[in-house]
Length: 223
Image (tube, rainbow, N blue to C red):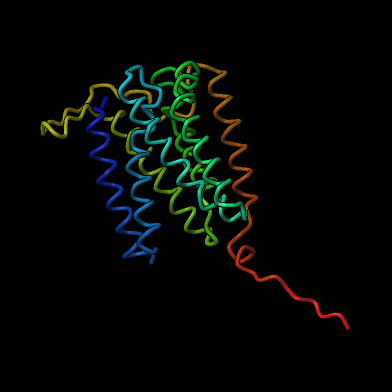
């Protein structure tokens, strides 16, 4: 299994490449491209949320406590909420994720269980898509794609090799680990993951398209 620092190094490199591709090849504006790069880098650590070690959990939930409110900020402002109300919601979400979610998540998951899987990768991407608001739906999918690229890099590294990038060592595993999987040994965990995935997929498919979001309201003249 790849090291924590190895995962971070790979996902950060992918994040830089992903942001650069967005700017130079897809015409993405610099701010959303940089955000997508950061999401890619952080998502490379997400599967370790089910780790038995306390260090990844502390670091990841601290990052999640910052990134989730950041992604949600544009959506709340688009709803026309007062700034003071938005700040209260984001502050409450920050403390809930940082101080409450970690304990609950650790009780509900096992290391390298269903959270190390392809459905979990899709859930991460759809969650980013639904959290982030932008009139251009393509920008939201771009961010979601970054989350899935980072998440997938973690699964691939765990599946293929033990990596110590800082030490300059690359050792292939004799037997691939169960990370690029679609189900786990726990039927309950598998069913739960697919129910969440189906729910998020339904919500994503029913989002208004860019044309609808940008279409101005019609003014009807009464004679």
